[in-house]
Length: 420
Image: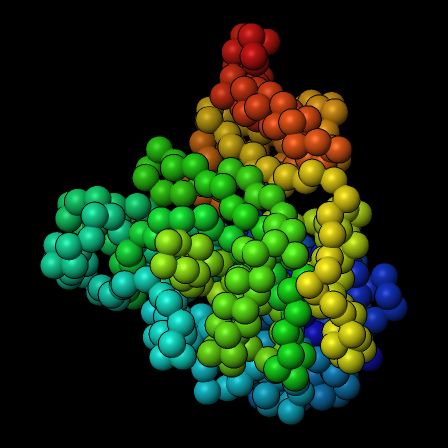
């Protein structure tokens, strides 16, 4: 068995590690010539038999994969979704339906496909100019909207806006930038801001059958630029009413988007009118550590994906309605408040907190570290776990206090950190 991973970054690197540990040969393919430094930081070439790099010659790439007798092609992160599905179709290997391929990347087409299936989506428009965006907002009579790129990820250039001028400025910023994957933004999505509790549901699918591996509830902050900053996430009990509701809704979304043979990461807002889709990615959820999740839950999306790739029928025997968590767990994103150089001592100080069970850094020691504005500018994340939520909350509060005092760049702010 040989599995090709397109863009094995973020959790895709964890999947390559898991497959490698199970004795599976993996090939790596790069979908774009230039890779974002944040994504490249997570890449580990040691888990691959061969790294084929980047090429725009899909015919030659298809022939190479045929010669290597590749049995599956899968995306490691969002940027690899389209190429992975294209190559799988060329090789006649299991993948998602080709007719809705564009809807699995373009958030507007995604909402249209889901709405056509009778499922709830936010009121939205696509704007190719700042004035068009501002005009639609004024006519929509909405109190607040979210302005975001159509095909990016990680809260890249996402802004909450309450006025036409704010919408105009947010749209102009998107149109003047590239996505985190290096793609030019040709338009912006202006979308109703939903009110409720936000969740993400990580699934794995085979032959149109879906299973939930993990379900988490998001908590986010509003950053200084008016966009969301990830705060923390906590698991949702599989037997809770919310989980049952979200499970049924998510499976219907996956069907509407033609996701039949891959992992998926679906974000849903549970509102007063019921679940409403935010977006879905036909790939693994990011910023997660599978071995930590498995320690407290017994299963992770990465582990379930690896099992399904090796022995697809094992997915059908997995009962996703009775998974349990043995501890209070919280996955906390780091938030840097002070510009400077990344302090090499910050991770070890965080690890001293009693409930911290793992620390993951996303920046090299001494590297320039700006204030956190989105997921890509976060210094990393940590898992907290304890027998009670009070213990987790205590250490979470201490971590945030240290961060406000300059934890991540404390060599520039020693007095503030000592006082925290």
